Image (tube, rainbow, N blue to C red; front, side, top):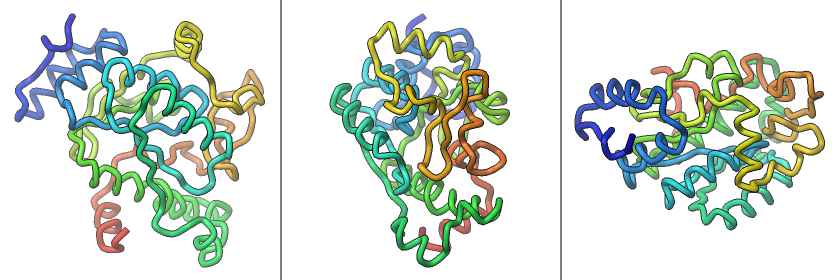
Length: 254
């Protein structure tokens, strides 16, 4: 099955989604990425946390959608190893890395608001809004993609288990090439392509975010148990915005 054969009419969003969901239901990850590249061309973007297994999705993009902008949201609280890993991988895979940061520095935020991540669920929501959701929305406004590639997998969270390979989010097409992959598939791909894990993976960090909210986990634990920022185990980036959230971002000039 070729990606070209799956190309829908460019101005019919509903037809695009319906046809893609059917035709890509049993497609492998490479075919899905090629379909996205051929369908959306320069209107494609990929987001990456440069986490434990991020090299998988980034390698797929470098092979089948080269030149696609890769967005990293830098909260100012990432591990030093994450910054180094991102730059090393970007050089190795020849990625077009675009780094977006909050409008207020981490030090400035803590001086004014304190440690938001320690202020219960309301504080966590505000922390995520300022440091992850707003920078991502700004990145999407600047790059103006028609479609967004993401390496989330169904087994990671309850929310992700309900996703489809191709869907719509906030007016854009969202494509999840490795949605159905198990952790064993991820590990096999890394080994077959001689790709690295995040440097902290060897120390038990299997789901890696900010320094203050990431813990190592034991082999028998769910990797997301190492993410202690908020009850949902979701950073907000992959959750659709509500109308109120859209208005809030706009009115606050964030």
